[in-house]
Image (cartoon, rainbow, N blue to C red):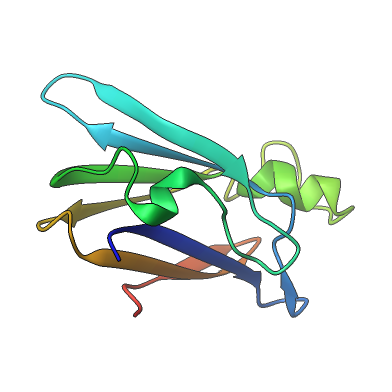
Length: 117
C-alpha cells in the first residue's frame, strides 16, 4: 500500500509521543507544499490520509516534529527553547506506489529515524 507512516516513541520514558504535532512538506524547487499535519495518537502512530498515499508523489519530503513543545506539555523541563525544539528529517520517495515507514526514537537531546517496513 502506498503512503507514509510515522511512529514516534520517547525512549527516555518508554512511552509513545501521544499528542506531538507532526507536519509533512513536499519540497519543490524554491518552496514547500504542506502535505498535512496531525498529532501522534495514543499508540504512537500518526494517522493522516498520507498513510494511504493521499497527496504523496515521487519527490523529496521534510517531516517536522514539534519535540520541544511536546516535552514541555509532558512537564519535562527541556527549557524554552529546548535543545531539540523542532526535529526535521528530509527523505525521498522514488516510487509513490511504495510505502515508506518512519519509526522515530527520541529524547530531549536527540532522535533516531530510519526507514522501516
